[in-house]
Image (cartoon, rainbow, N blue to C red; front, side, top):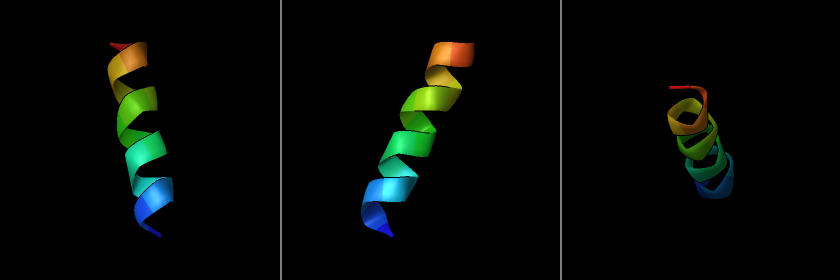
Length: 16
């Protein structure tokens, strides 16, 4: 769960 959240946050920043 924690890992997924971290990966998602990174992806979001990359998109922006």
